[in-house]
Length: 233
Image (cartoon, rainbow, N blue to C red):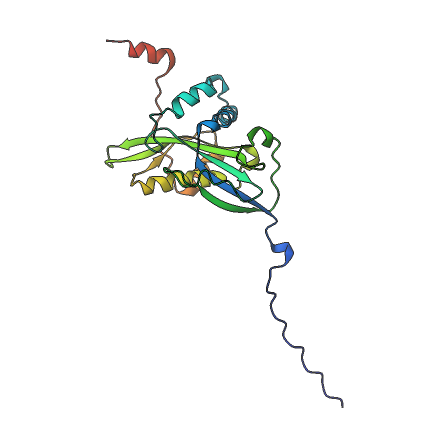
């Protein structure tokens, strides 16, 4: 009787991942301080946000008003109105002009997506910092103060990610950037408001650990009522 053939030698595990397992659509992201040259993008983003929130009838801001208020010579980042811009690119960022910003070192990250991003508006949001650098979103915030904590904090006025870039973690990146800065400065909290019908945003914020304060109501004095009240003795 012939001897049985020896069992096959064990195969070595592959040293590289199968091609199908490799991330096929990396997106390079950067969060940086906005500059006056970003005003046209900020204005477009703000208007898109007004459309999304069904509040275009209240939107009267202009590029000029943003330039004069957000980028006044007296404004110091994180001690006044501050805007962080989210940029995305198909390639690593090669420009270094923001790396030496004395107020804020840009946050960069590579996000691996299963599918490429189809952005029909990318030409309107293409920056001068590279052929494929696109503005995808922003967050605007400023300091406030908690008398109960005895500490300053940040109030997030607006956070917006363009439609093509939603549900990919970019909104969380922007809010995290604000939280990191608050912790760095020893601030006590970060807070904002959310529209009651925006259930997706509410769930998103709750998943981050934010508390929705149902017992509080936003009060606002504006327009003619503000003028009339300000004119009283």
